Image (cartoon, rainbow, N blue to C red; front, side, top):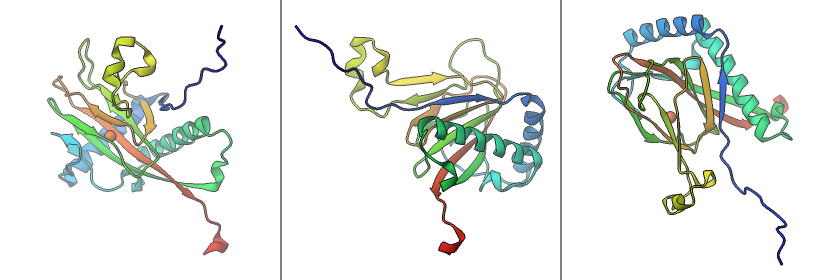
Length: 210
Ligand SMILES: [Fe+2]
């Protein structure tokens, strides 16, 4: 006779989705700002294959729509942090956010990558072309555990190797920066625009520390 004394999930990857209420006017302003920034800079090449990736920290901008999104990103980051670390006093930490804009044209995608050095990464969806079926514009997260294909035979969600979702415009997704992810090719004839950010915490030093 045996009796089970414990069932525990040892490790897990937290994942959050937030919805910005009344996002239509915010997104219209962000698209306008996106067009203006693109006129000023050719952008940089990161994980994007095709398309445009803004240069520098977008959240340094004081354009109202960007400041508004920065506030939402900060709020979502604090909520995610407080959810996984209920005993943490967030006032003891200083949060640095670094953001950039991605425009993903028809056929464009983002190759698998992580965001090393940050704690949380997030994406806000400014425009997401409508599709009825398929994977166009989906973001997929890959489980960092190795050897998972061997567990497929058990059909258990506990050993699922990947998870893909298709966030709508107005959504913010937040995940730990170590989590590998990539974006499926845009199969529509419209652009997909998103703003990604990295959130990094540092210990807050009081002024007397210099
Ligand atoms: Fe990313």
